[in-house]
Amino acid sequence: MAIYLSSFSCEIREVHLSQKPLEMIKLSPKGTVPVLLLPTGRVIDESMDLMKYVLSINNPMGIMTDYTQNKDEVDRMLYIFDNKFKYHLDRYKYSSRYEKVDPLEHRQKALKILEALTVSPIFDTNKNFITNPKLIDISLLPFVRQYRIADPEWFDTEMPCTEIKNWLSDFLDSKLFNEIMIKYKRWEALSERVYFPPN
Ligand SMILES: N[C@@H](CCC(=O)N[C@@H](CS)C(=O)NCC(=O)O)C(=O)O
Image (cartoon, rainbow, N blue to C red):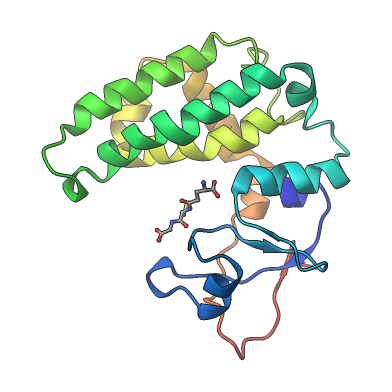
């Protein structure tokens, strides 16, 4: 979303995490996606660094205004989601991969974090996501989307936090989300180059 919104253009290589290409590991041995290779040879392999980089070059819609106006609170929330929320999300969504975890306990702990977000000054209670997305939207909504996917029926019918439900639903219906969710074939050394956004 940050690449798309910044009108940055890049070659995109779809990677299967079960078969990471050597070309990727050579650029970034820690083996996580995304990995962005710049023409200068610089490699950016943390999603937040990547977002901030492309948006610092071109930020036509003022996506970073929440960050410039309230940097400490945005950083605090990003940290909580990257660490605590992700921790509970993994144990809720993939509980069988962990020993002795109660997925519902982790669902509840993640819910508390979502509730805390809704009372933070950076949470846009006017829900301007569609016309006016902010860094906090494009960085946190993918986590919330995963939280819903773990049990869509519970999320849609019983999850008590309506602000979060509406926020996610605006996102899932948005042109932005639907234009960036493109299914790509796995990249191989001899594949034709594929560009994002598509021409
Ligand atoms: N802190 C990293 C985390 C990236 C991350 O964990 N990405 C996942 C996919 S969403 C991944 O590449 N996992 C590696 C694996 O499953 O082997 C970032 O924000 O870029």
